[in-house]
Length: 220
Length: 220
DNA sequence: GATTGTGCTGACCGATCGGTCAATATGCAT
DNA sequence: ATGCATATTGACCGATCGGTCAGCACAATC
Image 1: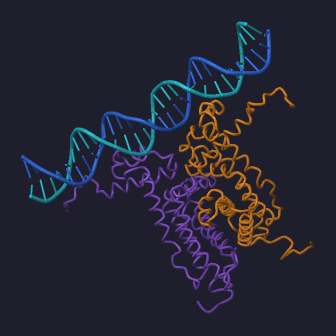
Image 2 (image 1 turned 180 degrees about the vertical axis):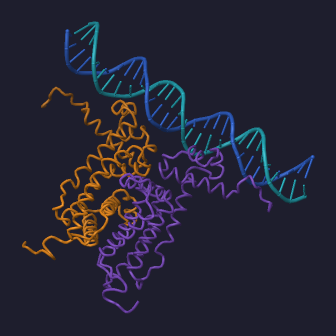
Image 3 (image 1 turned 45 degrees about the vertical axis):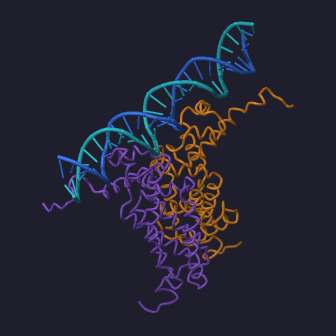
């Protein structure tokens, strides 16, 4: 019923591509570009190997497509930041958003990490170009915050790296974290506890003035 | 002259093994266990592939030997910690020692990271055993510090993870850091600047009382 | 019903994988 | 010189690698 012209049995092209991308993201994230094999990816996706190549062209094209997708996912973060923004709110949001992104895309995050570990052979241009500009722009704003006395005069690049590393750790080192905590995975309570901890330490550690407390107590 | 019984041309067994381990550590650190090939390792070491297998037995034995060596290097850290220790000194030392270890053994650190990324297939026992005990013992002491009012009541496990991630970042993500900073490698000044930043943010963020200031000003 | 275009895949290619082994070279005590 | 242990390595093995391709299935068009 409700049969339109598209066939019922055959999944659409989008669905097949999505299943390949999901499978490939998992395998690449565990073994890196060289360590992953198309046969394993195809098995994971439940397709013949030749079919994977039919849709994706080559191993490298598949890999680069995954990298590109992951980088676009991250581009949503920390876009609306100005010298007039409240550092407390921005940094809190930055920390929590990064934690959520890591939980939402664990395989993609690990894929990115493996690429960097290998020396970023496919991403060196992006790192030295787009991402560098992104960091420099945010760093300039953070420096203005410091100059305005809104926070300590810390090096903003180290601060950005700190938030990146501290949040990504729980995604990329999930095997280590799980082993040490003695659980299979982090619970929702763990994630909330970690987010609060990072917020507390980083904001307090950078001397960030809490809006609505301390210096300016305008009102509610 | 000064010719003892050992031959001059032929390197000793130790030197050959060391050159294999160094080469293997580099290749494994970039491509992980599956992505690394014995041929590439042998080329890197300047030896025939069969010779590598003669000395190391198998790819897996070589890999596990490197993992074991790296874990023993880390065991030197944070050994002398008691409830009576000064949190400020201990945490500072922890941060700086970790930064130095990462710089001293970049390949080994990345090798470890790749193993964790792959899901720690060779290290799950170690993580859930030795390392977990190590963390729990330190966590218990840090909790006592909090109870004594020496620092904020933060979750000590999250604090340990924070220091791990923040310091390891500059080793394992060196490709990203270099790309963003626009340098080939971190300078000595960078490392000192980063260490001071992390010390500042983490100690202040955890409310650690500086010995010799604030509450107790006994003397020098 | 013949033609055409797209989706699909088993079979295959040369290269490379980890690992074995026989043959040779070398060092040293006798 | 002889014998023995150790060191070395080219050649080779079956398996797997990324990738190609011919051919089949099938729905739409004429």
